[in-house]
Length: 74
Image (cartoon, rainbow, N blue to C red; front, top):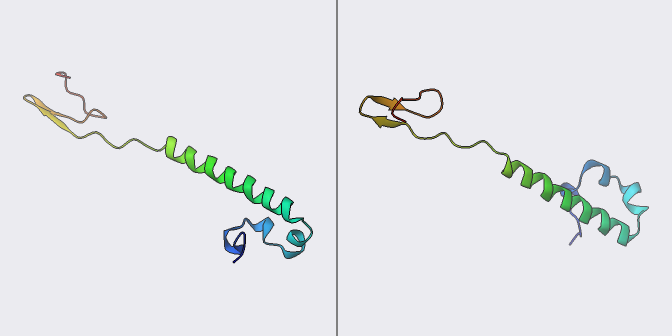
């Protein structure tokens, strides 16, 4: 079982000559750093995603969706 599957690696870590020139410790350190970087990037997308649209509310005098149609009753 491979430590870090070839298809999961970034392109620069798929080169056999480069990987074979590293010690096991260096290779594992690179893997750890790359995984930490991926976690930070994934968390950013989750934090800054777009909010869902608010449902349209209907007042006695008309609808209001709080985005482009605001009713004075609000």
